[in-house]
Length: 248
Image (cartoon, rainbow, N blue to C red; front, side, top):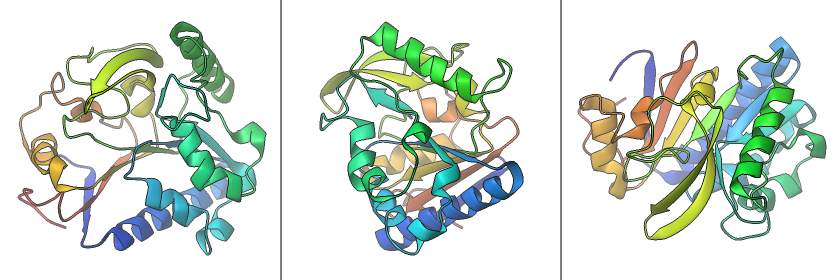
């Protein structure tokens, strides 16, 4: 596993979620202290749901600097925000409706739009948040990983080199065909802190390949995530980590 990558393995889901919530809260406080704001790109799926519930509860909801927090999403399905498949909708239900974050600080990908329009709109939101046309540098990028090695909506066989910040994707994962949009490594790898959340035995083989196997970014998109100046942290449970050769 290359440096500077940090791997943490947890025996229980509660410990996993507690560690993730504590890490994000600490990074948020540090960012606001240093720069006056905190930017976080969220992930969809079942793995981060426990984290989002914790961030909405004490003590984390009181420790998070919500008025200075700006939220983005690493990817989104092209569905309305109240659709069960919406990544934004999941976060709104579990977290946003329960914490004092200003509505103007929520930068959601508008999945109800047509793909080309949604990509252009989300790109414009990122441009407005960035400075002077530079690629936005988000404080924390939260990512998951599928059993096929995809992350965000970067799937096996998709272009490895992508200059655009946001792309439209048509993909079928676990029998669930969907149109999506996704941030690309051009934006993801600029983040100051990238955090992967990976749980479950179905991902154990892939996690071992991503961390310790040969570099195959064409077939393992998670390997495309290599921060330029930031840190990379993997938080996993023992089920996902069962085939790893190094434990920490």
